[in-house]
Amino acid sequence: MHKAISIAGIPVGLDIIGRDKLKGLSLDLLLSLRFYSAEFNKHTLCFVEKTDSARSYTPMQYVRTAILIERILNIPIVFILQSAPFYIRQRLIEIRRHEW
Image 1 (tube, helix red, strand yellow):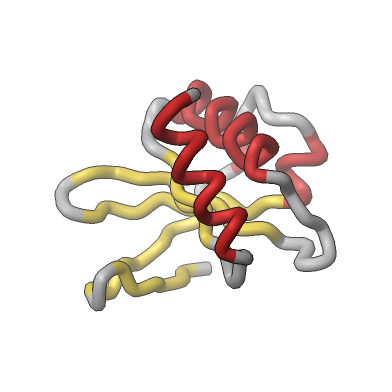
Image 2: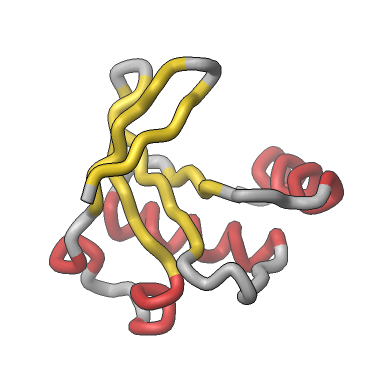
């Protein structure tokens, strides 16, 4: 299944990452998240999207999840957030600057 998103008005095609490349992630993460790879601005990235809209993550849970995925795939992680309150986006930015 192919999916596309737009980054700064530029369409980017997303390809699903197979579970064989995600060895080391818990079954819970494999079932609750969908993983895509894409190239943007000559960089390969992993885009992660929640599959369960009722489930919520705290900013720190996003960070811990991103660190774990990044260690396994060795590429930067980008979360696809359908909607997030301002304070969550702001907290993610602050955590990224100080703790990651």
